[in-house]
Amino acid sequence: ATGKDIHGVTVKVAQVAGRDNEIFHCFEIRRKVFIEEQQVPKDVEVDGKDDEAIHILAYGKCDKDNKTIPYGTARLLVKDGIAKIGRVAVLKEYRSQGVGRQIMEYSLQHLKTVVKCQKVILGAQTHAIPFYE
Image 1 (spheres, rainbow, N blue to C red):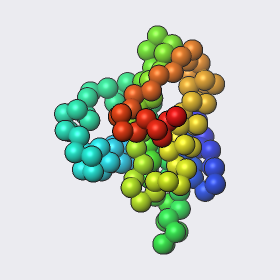
Image 2: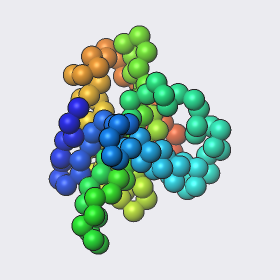
Image 3: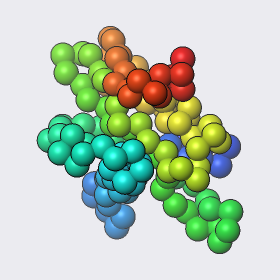
């Protein structure tokens, strides 16, 4: 799937192949947000489900040097027509700029139109629930 550019932020399905392993960027963002910042144990964050997941990556131009950098991600797990959106993470310095909302909108649209899911559930930490409401 091609990326969607919304207000300078591009959100797309991360690709494994090619020059730039986008999946690596997804894992790095999750490591920084969940393991380093939120102190989630590594064995909880790395749960063995990433190989079966669809990974979403958000990136854009950095104001300082106009370099394109990845700064947000989500993980979509699909089973029997039901999808679970989880591991939504945005690097600290890019929060409160609409990146998480764009990741969620793209994820829901992708699940509805491409994957054809009939039901979507959300996996979130309790302190993050207000973001999703």
